[in-house]
Image 1 (spheres, rainbow, N blue to C red):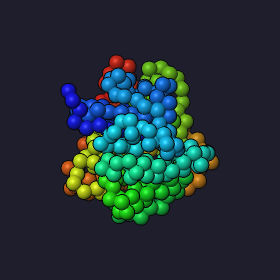
Image 2 (tube, helix red, strand yellow):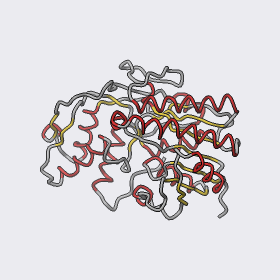
Image 3 (cartoon, one colour):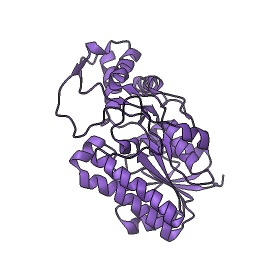
Image 4 (cartoon, helix red, strand yellow):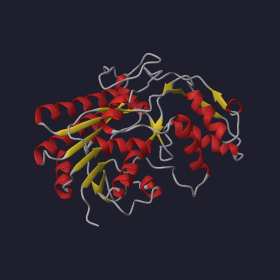
Length: 330
C-alpha cells in the first residue's frame, strides 16, 4: 500500500505518540517517529500496541535547529505532531531550565524549521490544561479562558502555545494547539500518580501486602482516555482552517474518587489500603480543573466517550492481564 501522507511524530515513544502512531498507521500513513537517539529509544509503548516494527525512527534533538532541519528534509512530512518535551509538572520545579528548553524553545525551533523549509506542512502542538492554572470549582475552561500558569511546566507550555499562534498569524502556517486536559491509559508512565494508584491496587489485590501512600486526595481533574485524545489531534490537522481546541471530557473528579474507583475494580475498600501522608506541597499546586469541549464537538465532530470511571476500569483490566490489550480504540 502506498501511504497517502507522511506524519512525523516528535515524541513517538511516549503514551500519546504510541497511540497516535497506531491511529495513523490504520489510516494508511507513513509514520516516522523521532527520538534523541533512535538506536537506544525505549519502544515499550510502541511494542505494547504492536506497531514498533511498522514505523520508522529517526534521531532528532529539538534543541538543535540543524537536527530538525535534517530530519524534516529527510522525511518530507505532510504533518508534524509535536508531543515531545519534559512532561511532568512536579519534575519541572526541579528542572525548570530543561523544561523551558524542551518545550518552548523546541516548539519555536520546529515552527521556524517548517517556516524555512516547507510552510505547507501542517503542525500540531501539544498544549496543556496546566496553562489555565487554578480554576474556580464548577467552572470549565474554553479556548478563550485566560492563561495563569502556576508551574515551570505550565509557563513553558504557555510560551509554546503563543508561539504557535504567532507563527499562524504572522506567516500563515497551518499550526494548531490542542489544549488537552489529563488523559490516561495503560501506557502512562509510573511517574504519574494515576499509574501508581492502578499498579498498587492490582498488586495489593493479588496479595502484595503493601500500603499505598498518597498525599492530597482532594485535587480534582478532568480525566479522559488517551486513544480518544490522539484522534482529536489528527482531526485538528484535517479541517479547512487552523484553530486551537480544548480537548476534555467536561467532567471533573477528585483523586479520592479515582482511588476509590481503582480499588473497587479489584474488589477492595480503598481506605483499608491507602495512607494519606502529609508532605510539603508543590509551589502553587492546582486544586481543580475542568475543560469545556464544546468547540471540539462543533468544529471537529469530536466527543469524549469515556470519563474517569471507565478509564480506571480499562487501566485496571489491562494491568491485571499481562496478555490483555490496552483497551478500546477511539
